[in-house]
Amino acid sequence: MKKSDKNKEEEFVNPIDPDKVAENPGTLEYAHHVGSGLVKAEDVGKQKGRAIAAMEHQTDQQLSQIYEQMQLLAEQAKKINKRKEISEEIYQANFRFEPIINHVYHLYKDENDQRILSIIGPNQWGRTKVKKYEWMATIKLLADHTWEILDTAEDQDADNQK
Image 1: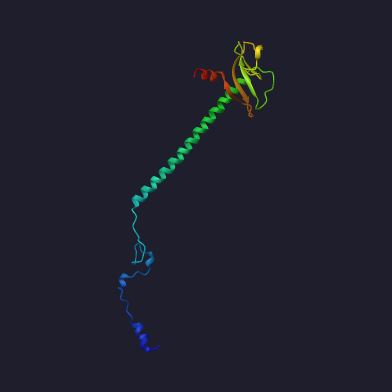
Image 2: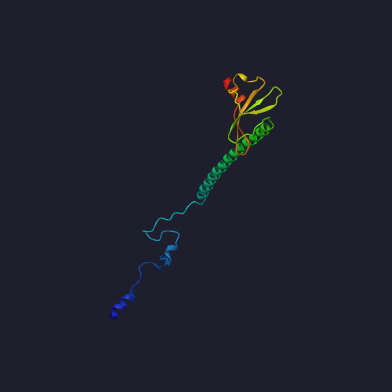
């Protein structure tokens, strides 16, 4: 390399004003040359408003789901409580056999208002049916020893009135 080439290198002066050049252009909050991506300041109030609206929507939706689940659980609790009450009434009835789980039985009321549990259905008595028994319900013994009501005289009366 010649002496004159070195001098030329040293003589080079950058035509860009040094006050307009950033040392770390990647940290600037704005585009530093024509090819840079557009950097647009965001309206913080608008951002917060959208975030709050999304948050409210999500929490309202989750609370609605929880409320529906609570209603379902309340209905299930009522059904279990009703089964318990009916089961207590049935266990106070007279019966001379051991009920078997998942078998269907029939509950009657006699002229003294006593409950009687029977394996004979209301349509199975034939001509020998004694008029002193009034059919109340058809029931089934569940595994937890509560009783499920399959049909009642009240339900049939309501159906006949329609």
